[in-house]
Amino acid sequence: MADAYDIATRPFTLTCPECGGALFPADVAAVSSYTCHIGHVLTWPAMAEAQLARIEFSLGAALALVKERAELYRQLALHGEIDARTAEAVIAETTERAERLKELLSATWRTLSPGPLVQRPSDAR
Image (cartoon, rainbow, N blue to C red):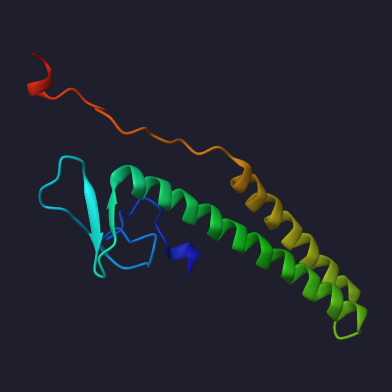
């Protein structure tokens, strides 16, 4: 599945970080905002902050699951259900992937503060 995913392909829509539903841009707003199908309304700063929190939560959950995979194989080898060599190979693989996830979790993400990012013609006076 991951091999077929093209990271450069733009998503069809944005999703609500609260419920996962599709978001629709507001028709008229002083600050860009988005509303989902059940009524969550997020300004772009709130959306950006909520997305980052969701990314960190998801990466943390993935890290925990990867570490659990290593533990499963340790237990299987300990109880003689699989051979030690197979367990060691899977544990090494999961440890490497856990380290990569940990690096992503500890990296600083770029954030923007709300405010004029570009000068509009009406601001140039």
